[in-house]
Length: 307
Figure 1: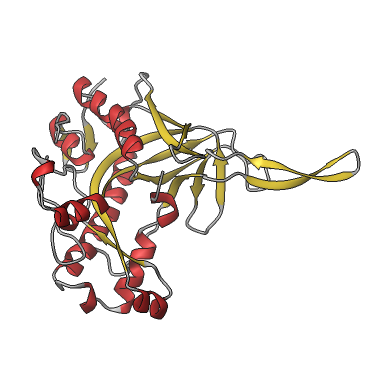
Figure 2 (figure 1 turned 90 degrees about the vertical axis):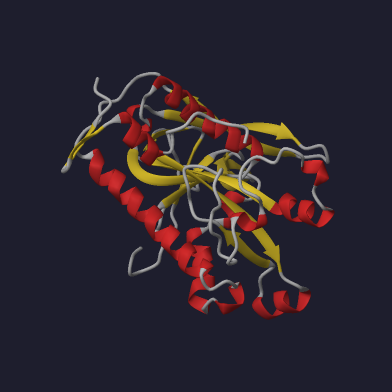
């Protein structure tokens, strides 16, 4: 099967498309008029959804959607739940984010604990990435830090707040899913954005892309099967990490895939334009209220923290 995607401008070879899709290099150690986010999001359900069912004529409270399920949150707010999800990835991007806490007065005035500093989405974290504070990399030096222990304590404190994010854009292939009351829903496919800032999930979700790069296959030629795994916290309780397995079966690339690919690229371009524009204000204090509110549209904070 050919590794070329046919477009209106002719065919694009693997190297070009791999760059676009975020698998151009092997792993190392190391705009629109209306600014809105119009992509369904995938997240992990942290707490089970409880409901009631009739048992021998009595209402009994029981779990209808288990914790650790994967959730697709549609743009209209509807949520669909499933134990596993197959995703046909079109591309991935990476970024940094840092949560900047407000002082008590500002928190009381705004009703918020703080704001997120976000960088542009990139196919690599080895370059300086503009962020919404007017700086770069949310305050971090680009690339791999060889001697972390030698950094000043103040710098370490900032670095400890910075999280890497992985963003996977693709078509979700949904089967055996339910709604919030446990009723089955019909199988469907839809474009989604799957993100994480968890260290373990970040690594796990990147492994299929590393394998694709070594195979010289494009992401859209395969499905990735996602699920979750429950882990124990040192302090007690449990949490869930995302696991990912590459399906070795190849999928044919069609001309129709060009439209989906371009839609994802347009979304990324709109987001990066917003970050760039905000960056050039040099300070969040100079941002308009509309732009500050836009963070909540582009970022699903429930989805990103602790996944």
